[in-house]
Structure formats: structure tokens, C-alpha cells
Image: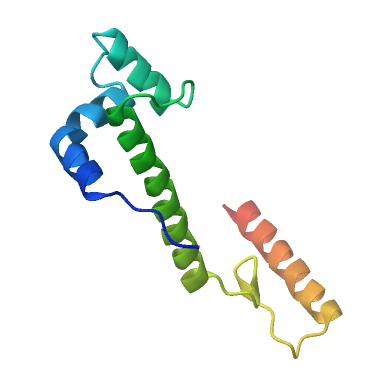
Length: 117
């Protein structure tokens, strides 16, 4: 499936009014007109986009979510190490019983250090 994108007219509109749109979305600017109140409602998902401004910014917000999700998944793919559990390596040459003994000993050591403080 092709990645949706902004068409040139939408990009121009967004570049021209982005700061204004963003300030309404975040609440740093209070809506002064009925159109701005409706724009905020669209940003919150409470109304359907009707104007070109609302449609463009709603599309931009969807693209922003998709991009953030993709960045998160890429970051997780780089940092996720499936052979690690709770921060400790669990190599194949440990049996499950050996692993449990090691974890139990770690817990005992941690409690002893806590008591010494």
C-alpha cells in the first residue's frame, strides 16, 4: 500500500499556516471565531473536517502519527534483543533451573545489600 502524502497545494497551505494551526491544536492560542472552535474540535477528533484548512491539517496529523509509529518501530527493532529478559542474558547453555537459581541468588544479594544500607 502506498504511503499517503500531502499534495503540493496542501503543503503550501500547511507551510503558510502551520504555526497558527499548531497553536490552536495545542491550546496556546484560544479560538476566537466559530471556525476556529470547529478547527479545534476537528483536531480533537470531535468533529469531521469540512474546510480545506481542517482537511489539510487533519491529513497532516494522520501522517504525523504514521511517521512517529514507523520511527518507534525502527527504534524498537534496533534496540530489542529477544534473547535478553529483564536485562540479563539468557544463553541457550543455561537450563531453566540454572536460570531460576541465578535469579534467586540475585534477589537474595539485592536484599542483603538493601539491609546493609
